Length: 134
Image 1 (cartoon, rainbow, N blue to C red):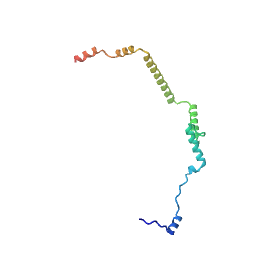
Image 2: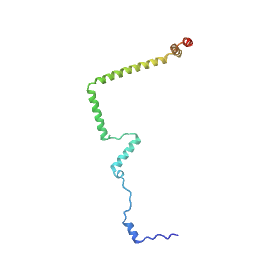
Image 3: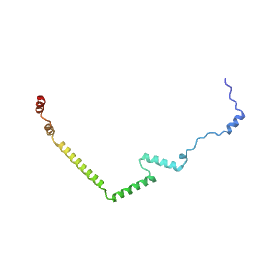
Image 4: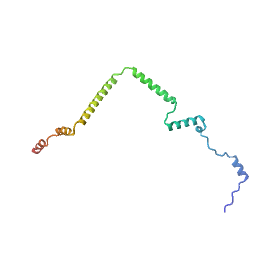
């Protein structure tokens, strides 16, 4: 058997002099303002509501974007922009025509569509004699 550990007075004094470890304080939890903000954010996230005030950086960026849009709207469009808009309008009109054609084909009976595809296929009797003669 192991004899019980005897603590001498010297060891006990050394232990008393040592700094005992303590759990550090979390500054985020210690601040009442940060705690209140965190609770508000959690509450808003649960309800799906955005916070009342936007951050300052986000407000400044939105303001700059609005200013840039105003400046672009006031300045006359360049030649490149005008050509790009014309091209975009042409492609939109082509797409609209294509949609109209496909919708009109959907309304056509099936036997008419099949007959149209048969007109495009060459006659098999015309193809075979040419290959046979060679």
